[in-house]
Structures are given as structure tokens and as C-alpha cells.
Image (cartoon, rainbow, N blue to C red; front, top):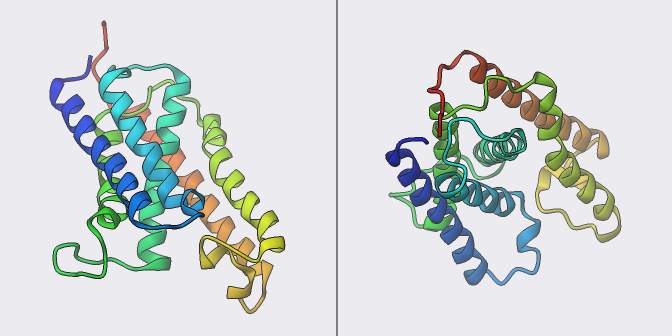
Length: 205
């Protein structure tokens, strides 16, 4: 079993993420709430942390759980990167009234928490590099959905997915989307590579 302090911080930050998502859901009357990648990835990260504290509290877990955990980590890191570089930038959550505490939790705190967690308790050292393909199912499905439905509804959750944002239309969308997919791949390979060199205790439980 992993130490109690790891289970404790997982539970605390996991609940913080779930509370932040719930708070946003209650305070923003948006029928498209669950279509935003930030809300989805924050919910996934919160669930992964809570389950990682209560049910999957081992150093060695099933392969499928490592895949889910890897997806949550990468999704949260990409959320933080995209938000900082393409959307609202980096801000000090303690000195501005333009952002809610829930926004700070989801866009700034949780990416850091998920990164630290995967560094402390890495994936299994036997994780094959080809498993990075599983990490792409979620983002490719997400992008594909809005590229298809957006042509009919003309609504997109983010400007960088909207072809009207670019002078070259869908070419710009595919370039930006391709760059984000590449980020997913590179982060996934980095996590797998790290798991192969990081020594972790053997869980006899």
C-alpha cells in the first residue's frame, strides 16, 4: 500500500476538484457545461484521485487503471497548458477578482497536483510505449466530435477549434489540433519513460 500521506493528499485534492466542478455547475447556467474539456478533465482527475486514495492505493495497479490515470494526468496538464498559452494566460489567483476560486483550482492547481502525483507514484515500469495510443482515444474523440458537429451548429467550446478563428479556416484548426495531439503523445511517452527509470517500492499487499 502507498503511504497514508499520499492517500490523504489524493483524497483532499480529489474532493477539491469535484467540489470545484460542482460549484461551477451550480453557479453557471450553461447547457453546454459538460462539453468543455476543462470540466471533463477536472471531473476525471477528481475521480481518479479519490479512487486512488480509497481503492487503487497500491504502487502496482492493473494496466487498465494506469491507462485511465495516464489519461487523467495528460488531460489535466494539457488543460493547464492550453489555458495558459491560448486562452486566459497565467494569473495570480490571490490578487485578481476576474477568476473564481473554482477556476483557479481547475486551471492552475489541479494540473500541478496531477503532475506531482504521477511523479511520486509513477506508472508501472512494465508499461509498454505502445499504450500511449490509448491516451489518444479521449482527445481525438473530443476533437472529432466538435469538428463534425460544429459544421452544423457553428458552436465550438474553444476558439482554437473554430475554423472561423483562422484566416486559413480548417487548415488552422488541423494545425492547432495536431499540435495538441502531439503534446498528448509527448507527455504520454515522457510519463512512460519516467516510469521505467523511477524506482518505486514493491507492493506486497
